Image (cartoon, rainbow over all chains, first blue to last red; front, side, top):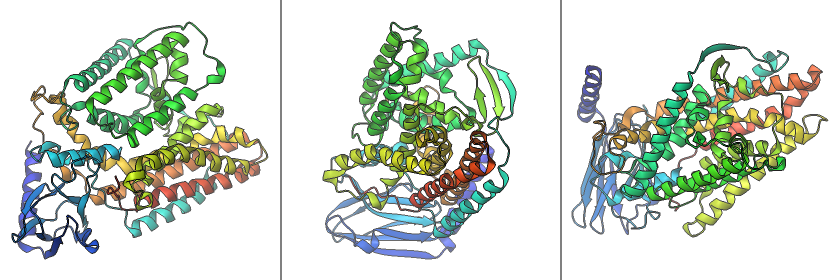
Length: 117
Length: 437
């Protein structure tokens, strides 16, 4: 399907442009006892921005950014960065992998809200 | 529904390798922004006045055009396909993997059928009357169903189904779905055998009753002789015969469930984990009675006619508002999470098959964005409100001989409709909270 390919190429191009030209938004996030500060439970950015979530944590964790599907490993003394171009709008959770154990205890660490331009 | 979503979300954290299913079952909706909320609310009120000014045609009759007649062999073929899918789902549930993401049953039942088929019915009419896999049993019945039973079994079953959908923790486990389907089949076939097929379809087959009401909104009318007729959307609600008490309560349960489903995802329903099941069960059962009380109160102030009779006549006119909210709430979810049916159709049991070559389909999360979700929500909700107002107005003009009495009867109902629409919009403007439980 050529049309689909063209669309895919455009999306890729847009993502590249976004990565090179768009303003950069950074968030310094400290995870303590598997929690983030209340003010950072929802991070708001605008479509098209480059975003960096700079993590530090008091225990080794695997973070999963749903929707964008990015996995980040963070550990004490080993900060890590989740970097992405905000091209999908919506409200996407970042969750700790393996959190809880029981399927009902799962909760998001925080949400990234990507608002349309 | 989102109990299933939550369950998915969590199960996935266990299985980081499941790339396909990662996006499955999650909602990525942004709350409706303030300016759109205000625009929609303003439009709702303004258009309510327009309906009052323009809906003057007397009577509840409506125009329709013959479309086509479905050939009986096609009906047979469609039902055979439906029964086939039903058997695959049950077999998959019992024999396939018990991972809800890699088995077709949970995604098909909770997303494709329960949400998708509802919208399909609203668009093309009462397809369920043809596809219903339980209709394969033919029986005149051994006993006559006592008239007092009405559709109360269907009401009870709708509440039970909603409880399974919203509250029950095991609702995404494939084997549970298969056993429930088998149990329900046994119940339905017993009911059909003992009381006759048609009698049980009307009073106990909850999905026939449910999709039957949804189909009243469709622009296509399905007749029992297989003829399809084109009509205006929601014209099926222009029925001057009042419902039975049980049918009216069934509709009220439908209205309340849609609202409750949205409400319990808002910060308002911030119940602690320990009390979640009990509180949500109580809320689910209480809200229909609260709705019934409010609607009865409104009907009592409509005119001097008995409130119960007015309620049984006018309560279906609220359905467009409920369905519109349902669409606003679930359309983007259906379009994104519903894609999971594509890979799972090729591998329904989760055994690594690739029957149709779609097993490696990746979900496109970006297919709809926030802006699409917002604008469709607002348009659908305002349109649903206008349809509801218009239909109610027409019914009133058919019922009351004096135009002034008819108009006066609509003030309280219009107020209720505006309030119900506003409540839907308000819920959409709330952030979705999934931390509880």
